Image (cartoon, rainbow, N blue to C red; front, side):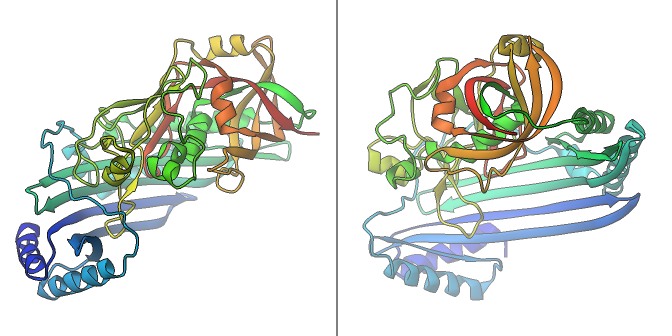
Length: 450
């Protein structure tokens, strides 16, 4: 049964069962993954996935149900489960079925050439990536990860208010993590490229980046504890922004899980900090014309020169605050309920290149790697304590690599203490959104070392 026919049958049954408004959210996609280890295929998988969720208003409450099978048996099950789910709800908050603005941006997130790329060519790319890493230096003794992953996803929303929306996108990732050894000392690093155009993946460039990064830590040692002026590399700052991005969710603010309550319109960061959420970004890995509720997406400046302009809203949280949705409704999967998430969320780059940023740092530490963002960061309070690596900087120049240190601080305070923003914007691997940042300078962070 095709999705349109299924929706029509399901909606007819929903109306008969007493639902006043209803909607389906359908996803259909596939994924490919190949990993290489010691010149052999270590893992190889090709998976397809599809699923449909139904939600509907029953006696003023929103019930949810979901299925992976589109047949007549699923129709009755979806209605029954959604009715039971609605009847069990005790709170007064109600999700909203959207039926408003039908003007949507034209986003080209699907690359037909990538879709037609053969499995053999993806495997060859992974083998070439391994080959290029091994050729980069004789000090490469092993490769922890070497993989190529592709994915295609299609989302469709149909509801009783006349919406019928569809969006398709695809992506390819190449990831490598070499292990280098010198005088008995072992280091590792990784590099990646994520895009929807496989021609943009340069295996030699990825190999050089990862190997150079790993070798740069040779001879690293700890340094005395204290408070230091710090530069944070773009990819590290992007990961930190990812970890704490939930503070900008209206849901978290309303539930007391963010300290930004009552802060809209006030200064929460340094004037050099502007944070943008751009779901319409060309080649953005989280770009889409509509959100999980069918609300049109648009580009918004969340923080402008340090001032908090807006939180991120879905329909329910927007109604609670008496504002309009920002088009940031999300679903972690077709089976989940509606949440709030950013899209392509990034700190706006400045003018200074990396060399000029180091000159502005003068004396301090350049942080190029952190560990423990999941365990060492409190996403509510903003506190963090993270194992880190990097370089000691004197007069704007790298003096020596540094390891076995811990950086500690608070994300809210970090935003206030950013004094310089570089021009080297970089996005990390997507995780419920796509997060980016240039390298930044922070006037002070606590470092625990020797």
